[in-house]
Every structure is written in structure tokens, then in C-alpha cells.
Length: 179
Length: 327
Ligand code: SF4
Ligand code: SF4
Image (cartoon, rainbow over all chains, first blue to last red; front, top):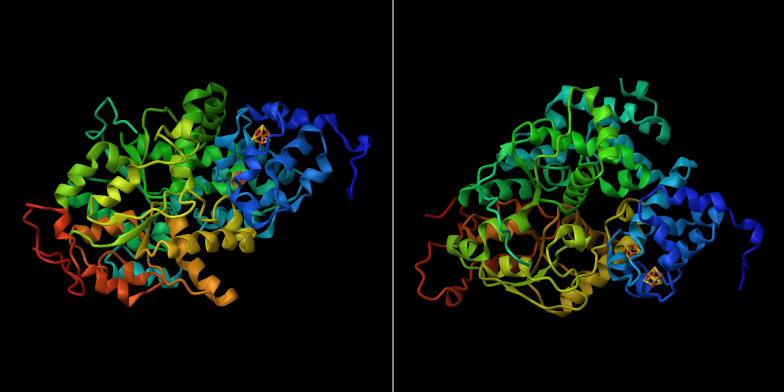
């Protein structure tokens, strides 16, 4: 093995944090059958990606290895592994918790940050553009959908909630720049 | 999958648009409005709804924010006393999961309501979240959909359920996640044939934030799926989700650009397939606005699978190219 695990790498507080997600403690039930990774469509195309390994490393408290692994962001949340696990390990729910711990520690991918910013700015993760305004008109739909796009007060509500949840600070976004 | 014991078809319904349908594939919005109207199902407008918000990013980043923004959308429908209808698996995942979590977990509900009170709203938990495919199956039934068909389609279809329509299976209660059939039955109600293909239940590749952040990985999944569909010699893909739709339609362009691989398989949302069978033209349903355009497909649309509707007096043709609803 190229990178043997040192006992000093294990951080018991990591598992405590993971356990905040109800059911995530079940990663301790994993008996290494590989049912999860065998059917994983991502493993199928990127063999190094292994959900079982990520979860077992998490159970062992390998905080830094897990949170800094780019593989944390490969999962499409297709739920196949969670459906198939004979031990009822909440593979996807736990992986999402791992991601949010990473985010809390400042690890987020620029593309995801951008989508979060779109929602803060416009209320939509994928806002309307010129081309699609035209397509809507051609289809005899209102040029702007009747969503936050047509409703400034609704957008204010969304921004208010984002702030109230501290999401703007989490993502490092300055609401002042919305003006 | 079993039918509901209670009759939910009489309940009010609001249309939740989400982001990708109205802002990237408005044909899906148009088709949804047309087919629901034709089936006699009225949809209330959900004014001021936002992004669901996108599960890939928001559920990954911060569960509390995810629940809070989703609950605001649920509140809008609660105030109309209407169940909420989605046309997207991602919106369905966010809204249905949030609705369930807040109904089951008093602590989560209290936390969300504390934030909502600041904008004068409160989540009470009195409505249900529906997905158009699940709704049509349970509340309308494939038989009634079939009765409404006037232009039976003679197409070989690769049905793509998408992941979050049926999983987590325990929560969705739509039967087997490995081998479901309800969506296929609705597709076959249009006259089309749902064709078996390798690893049919596999993911399109887009979800979980993969499309935006790890595009190569996402496209590799899409490529596999398209190869399997192509080997089954299908005329088109039919999906239940604008995000899978985008991944297949735009993804084919990206695969052609990057790898020079051409599939040229048209992509339809179920609302668009049904719209064709109800006699609307591809232009009215926005099918001509997809990136992938295949002239053989349009020719095939002119052929009618009348033999699959024996003894039925069917309407005139699909107003293909005529831009009007046939009589
Ligand atoms: S399927 Fe479950 S028990 Fe088997 S290896 Fe994966 S997580 Fe462990
Ligand atoms: S949910 Fe993620 S890890 Fe599990 S099978 Fe799907 S892509 Fe793989």
C-alpha cells in the first residue's frame, strides 16, 4: 500500500460530527461486502472511486483524508448503493453529511459555489437567459416564468432566508454586492 | 406498485416549475400545461416559487438551508390548499424529502418555522408532493391515458426513470427500484414500445452536483447509458426530469465536441411524448428547441401505431408541422 494509515491520523471527534446526521452512525455496521461499490455507476467509469472506502475511512476517523478527497464530489447521489446495502448503511445520506462538514471547513468546488450564488442573486440555480426568453415567447408562454423571476418581493424572501440561515457567510458571499 | 387507497385525484394541484424546465427547456413547461389541461386536470400557479433548491448543491452544502428554502416553496402551495406537482426528479427529491422530514421531525419543523416566521410564513405539513409521472399513473391510470390518445405513436422508446423518482424506494413507495414498470406502462399507453436495454436503471450522470463540478465523470456515465440505448436501436429517449433531459440532450453535443462521438438520439420529457400522442405538434411541445434534431425521428412521428388500438376510432394526424391541435 502506498499510503499506510497512521494511528495518529484517526480523529475520534470526526465520527461524533458525522453522527449528527440521523442514521449515519450505521457506517459502523459495514461488513465490507462491497455491495455498494460493485454496482456504483461512478466506480464503473472511475475505478479508483469507492464509496465503501470513503465511508470506512470516515468510520475510522480519517478526517483529513476524507474531507480533502476529490472523490467526495464524484457521487451523483443515484442511491443505488444505499438501496443495495444489506446492512442498511445510509451511504448517500452519510456522504452528503461528509460534504457539508467539508463545506463548513471551507472545502467547496467553484462550480457549486457559483450555483449557490445564482440562487442568492436570482432565486434560481439556473436563471433565465436571453435565448430562453425568446424560446418562451415562441411557445406562447410568458417571457418570464411566474416564479421569483416575476416577483421581486419573493426574491427578497428567499434572500432573507438565506441570510437567516447564515448560508451567505458559509459560502463566503457578500449580500451587499447584490445591489 | 399499487394504487392509492384514498382518492387524491380530487385534490387541488399547483404546478412547481423549478429552474431547468422554465429557464432551459420551456417546451417541457408548455407540454405539461397542454397535456394536463387536455386530461381535465387544472393546475394552480405557484407565484413567486424559487429554485427547489437544487439538492446536489444545497443538500450537500447545508441541510438547514436546503430545508428552509424548500419549505418556503411548500408553504406557497399550502396557502393555495393544493398538493404540489413537479415535473422534475430533482425538485421531487427536494420537496418530497423536505415535506417528509418536516412532518416526521418536530425539531426540524420548529427550526424551519423559526426562520419562516421572519417572512410571515409557517410550514404546517398539510399537503403532499407529487411527480407528474407518478401522479398520472396513480390518479389517472395508463388505461385512461390510453383512452385520451388520438395519435398512437409508432416509436421504440428508451425509458429513463431517473434516480430520484423512485429512490430512496422506502420513502417513494413506488415499488421496486431495480425493476419498476409504472413509467413503462404510461409510455406504452401512447402506443409507443418501451424497449429493454442494458443497465436501464443506471443514472444519467448529472445528479449530486456532478454535472457542474466533475463534468468528465458525469459525461462518462451519460456516454455508457447512450451506448446501451443505441444498441437497443431506439427512436428516442423518454425521461421524467428536465435535468436528465439536459444531460442527455446537451450531453450528446458535449460528447460529440469532446470525443467526436455522435449518437443523435432525440430526447423527450414524458409530457412531450404524451403531447404528441394527444395530437399536439412537435413545435407546440418545444421538441424542435432541443439541441438534438433528427429528421428520421420526425418522419417516424407521422407513422401511426393503429394496430395497437384495435377497434378504436382515432383522431386525425398529429398536427406535425401544422402547428395546430388536430380536430
Ligand atoms: S454494501 Fe453496505 S455493508 Fe456492504 S460494503 Fe457497502 S456499506 Fe458495507
Ligand atoms: S449514490 Fe453515489 S456512491 Fe452510491 S452508487 Fe450512486 S454514484 Fe455510486
